[in-house]
Length: 605
Image 1 (cartoon, rainbow, N blue to C red):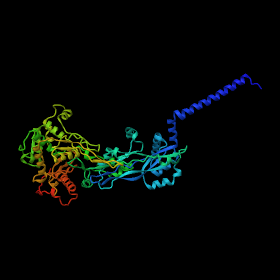
Image 2 (cartoon, rainbow, N blue to C red):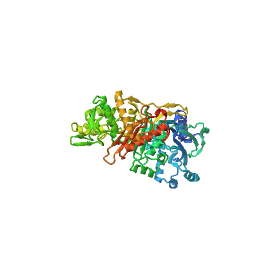
Image 3 (cartoon, one colour):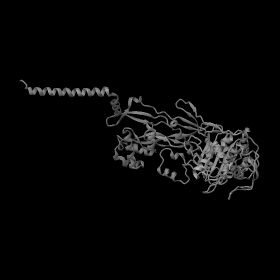
Image 4 (cartoon, helix red, strand yellow):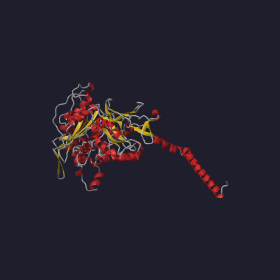
């Protein structure tokens, strides 16, 4: 049978079509298998292999004697894999966890947007009873799992929440700022050394690879776990902190508002930093209940506020040595220049009072007895420019650079400041009188005052205050010391001798205002201050150091609304000095520190 021409044409057309389709699929196969193998091969692998992140253990923290002060404890976090989760069980899951359904749905939505095959944390720090209930009902809760992670634990009496800081789940803002280093649900340091040394403490994530089928169900470990990446622990920190002194200082401030900062004068290392009221750092470890967080924020005592670095109060008479240093160094006065104190100072129509009538008083006696009239007079004689310049040299009006990422630079008034605030030519010398006794618009933090005490202790050497002394890298165990900056406040040796003599007399001789800071067997030096407070009782200050000849501790104590510094702040400082140098409150003094006990005195400031 002979095919018609039309049939032959159709057959050739059909054959050409088949060849064309075959040729198209052949080209596409070559394209997928050869040209685009890297791209589509990886996507295929992602569909068959699930990556499960494993969190590293955060680095440990030790005090200056090697005592563990920040530890880790295991905790459970509930996770949901968005690709497997059935939203129909949200109500049931919500009842088990005590979390609103909307919160669960929102977190699942965010997890799906990131990667629907990666488990998303829904609730941290769940208790074992809740975990057991979930495990018993696994068949009703598709996509639900859990991860074992760690949370911070504080094994000693030293809580130091403002110094240690705390960690929290990363916020959306932080996630945007950090880029690819973090992902949703990660824990990050948000304050204190936890934040400042985050990159050291965090460690590196690990990853577990699981084989899954087309429905996303887990079949088992991929490649017999040989491809898994083991998480690397965070590095350990060694601090300058003395945990026993920290705990003791915290106990002395219970029921008070204020701060204590103690430094090592040889390098600026923080021995103790207390801010009261404070909070239990365990409240911030793991999941913090909303009502607890709201209560801390609403507390009128402001326990979250770090009074050691963020407070800005007039320092009162503790600031008098700055004026004395400026006047002596610039030759405005000599060591024997004196003022006759009648108990009051008149400037124009205003009377500035003193607590006592001191009679004829030179600079050493003025520091010893805290004679206001002397310093009112000296302030006008020295002038604002010199006073402000030397205040800046001592570190006031600027951040100290302390390594906990939060501090207030304070306020050190200057001519530029007064011209800006009041207008050039619109302020008078009357604005300066109160500055001479550490009052007026002058604003200082306790960390700045502790640095000031350190400089007075070592006759001019200023070290940047810091709490971390070394980082111990894992797994090598190599310890790297953290350097600190230093500078010299260049005053003549005779000036330092005069000022330090005054500080010695404040604590150790009759008429001094700081006798309550005495420690048996030690020579303590310092200065009291009582700062006027227009909103209530005066604030009590003390700055000092010991031993006098070879200082090992410099300290600042601030107690808000407490009255006289010599009555309230000085004895707290004395107890802290005794605790640090003797390791207890009744021990025998080392022979190198023994000094003759001074006579009893009753002056106040």
